[in-house]
Image (tube, rainbow, N blue to C red):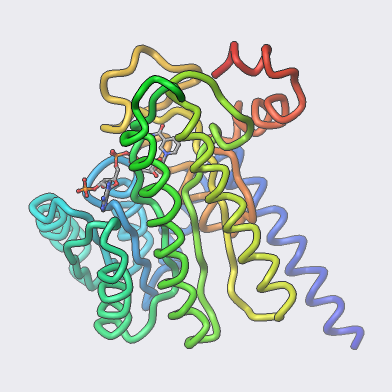
Length: 289
Ligand SMILES: NC(=O)c1ccc[n+]([C@@H]2O[C@H](COP(=O)([O-])OP(=O)(O)OC[C@H]3O[C@@H](n4cnc5c(N)ncnc54)[C@H](OP(=O)(O)O)[C@@H]3O)[C@@H](O)[C@H]2O)c1
């Protein structure tokens, strides 16, 4: 009993140390994990892996030794990514499949086919998303509906498909890519986008609560990225605290690897900004959005 308690205390202390290092020095933290090849014989499934954060995460997971199950609509890009990563890391297995996440039945087919290919899926990153949204009441319902559908309903289907697999395996790590815009209701073109990402974060928290209740050993992480320069914001003017895709994906993968329950990334300044956003008056939040 005493030994069990000591082990638990030691594990908790190590996790706390890992999480602090992953947040403050993600590149250094990932260097250690690369050396240890923590992903060896494990498989990570990433949706929306054809560009931006999904592509960046796939590259970093490959470097850590993970096998990759990647999907998106632009398979030419996935094919190129597979070729590049196979050359760099010949020991890992990479499979790609075409997936339009608005086709819900296909999400289940693709995830199950990957599970069959690899025998086990250790982590699923629900990443595919779009940034199009417009002011409410200006005749752009179709644009807003599509954003809500892809960023939330399609993400719900991906969570369902992932959790089916994890429940059957009795283990797994579900990761959802939300956004700092989920912290508060936001104006202008951010209203529906932020609402869809807030709904996704709540969904993930509910799944996490269910895992606690049922004592299933499935972990759930919610990542809240700040502004990271990718195709989603390609035409945007300079954005507050923006970082390049390389810096952003390192912060995301470090947070995922340290199994943070929730992480604002990059941690500085976004964990502080997130706290402020939750508590400041709405007209002040408007100024930083
Ligand atoms: N960059 C940021 O500042 C930022 C901040 C917060 C959150 N995020 C979130 O991070 C995630 C990745 O965004 P990103 O910045 O990497 O943008 P991105 O470069 O535009 O990547 C979006 C990815 O989603 C995929 N996708 C979009 N619609 C899809 C569909 N119908 N079916 C399947 N895949 C689809 C795209 O693949 P195909 O087009 O090939 O299908 C692409 O791989 C998104 O959920 C986004 O909301 C980004």
